[in-house]
Length: 242
Image 1 (cartoon, rainbow, N blue to C red):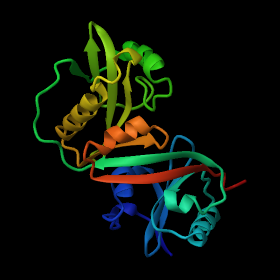
Image 2 (image 1 turned 30 degrees about the vertical axis):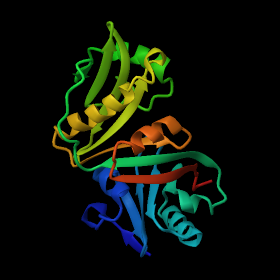
Image 3 (image 1 turned 90 degrees about the vertical axis):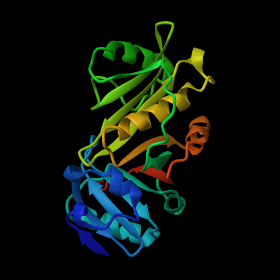
Image 4 (image 1 turned 45 degrees about the vertical axis):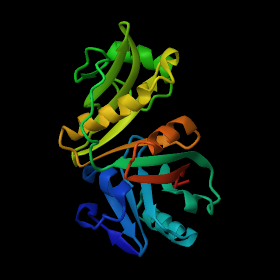
């Protein structure tokens, strides 16, 4: 097992989640085996270890022990689904990460969708998300968001999606939501495609999003949108100092 001190100089090509999503300024340290990379980063919850590739339970335990020796706390760890099935830990969530590396071909624009790049609609979006998606992963005025796309019908917000562009020119989409009165009308699909196009127009190198495994409707939607990567993860709560 090799210790990493700067993930930016490592070859992460075979590991698209780490290459596109982990930010250099969040990096603390990492570990590399012949078939996997584990990276420990800072985060809202004090620390996060993300592992991608094929790793045995023994290698996983060794990595956690090495990290603890450095004095780090790991409240959360995300591992490939296959490894998670072999570990006797309490599951926090199961989710799937999607990555798109190229924009879609040009297409007609839905005139009901418009972009918001300031805070002028924060209250409206917050009120909408309380109804359409109470557990939305990104909120205006709380999370760093570069733009929102809103679908408006008869003067009301019918759908939303947010895009955040990180310093490494990676865009991540969140808070895709459609009002209950306007579901099954194709709005989620239009918002997702438009958000990907608008993000690539800002010179990003990839656009990603994540969805909980149990959200079958969302999984069906994204799988029909020709993403380049789909990687299944399981996250655990892991207090390595406890």
